[in-house]
Length: 171
Image (cartoon, rainbow, N blue to C red; front, side):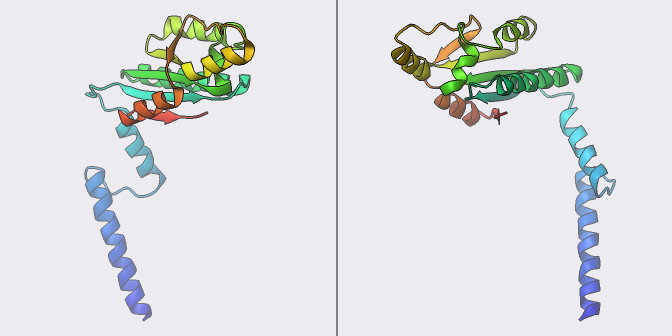
């Protein structure tokens, strides 16, 4: 029985080595370095014609969450600019997260303005349903920053972006 186990383990190791050598173009790498090589190959494909696309959800009225989302956006844009690839990013706000794009309550409006001036690949979507509800509750029109575009439903917008192949991030 022990011999059978040793033979089976040996066969499995040979199979794994063959699979890995096929995937890495002939070099049989196993372990963390193989993962690093695969990740590097995926992000440095020079002839990528489609831009990378990222949808970022903000649904909390929390300056730390808003800043984390903007940090993630900056990091992604910087990464793809450094390797010569295009990226499109849309920050979608709804619920309490709409405060991120409100002219009167946003703790990050100056940062958004600055980022928008240097990152044409970045857009901001404000949930129209949330804005409508806030208007009723506060009995006043809810002003949005100039960088915000209104979408009927933030949740639906996120679904549609994901259905079109956009990656999704909720910081």
